[in-house]
Length: 248
Ligand code: SF4
Image (cartoon, rainbow, N blue to C red; front, top):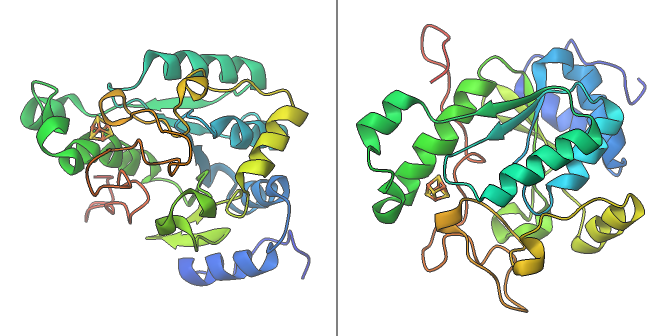
């Protein structure tokens, strides 16, 4: 069977992810994205924060198919520079289907009416502003692409190219890239950096929960600094569809 032959017969998500991970082990990221697009067609989207390292994955995806849906979670707490950077990359790469996900008005009114929830419960805030909007958006999808890399954190040190995420497959085309690979790709394609990188932010999330990082610190040390939290929750198993099949 050729590397790009579709796997319609494999019904179990975990089996499908394992077969794809084995088949594309060592393949270039662009080939992995192309294979995912072929395998999952319109059931595939890419999730991007338009953060410090996002340009590489978005550029690769645009080379494969600029019409690939891109999901962007606007928590309402992002740096204005991130929104401007998003607009710059969308125009530069010709991305044609960027979908902005926002927290629901009902959730905000009920659970974060003053917008200060992040000060006392970051997990609850991320749940309302990131996890639930993404869960609703991916409810109708078969697979989604993430930009996670193994070097970023110990919690990410074993991520495969394809993995099961509940009933969906999560695709990690840059899993084995290191900072040198990213820098080289940015330079080779003259990609613009997020403006906050030059100000000491190697990892960029929401404004209240992101601080600059000192030389030699872990690149994600500025995320939720001072707490034990290291992930926003969108890369934990997402809430699944309810009995009626509607997204939560
Ligand atoms: Fe809220 Fe901070 Fe999470 Fe953003 S990163 S959703 S502000 S807790």
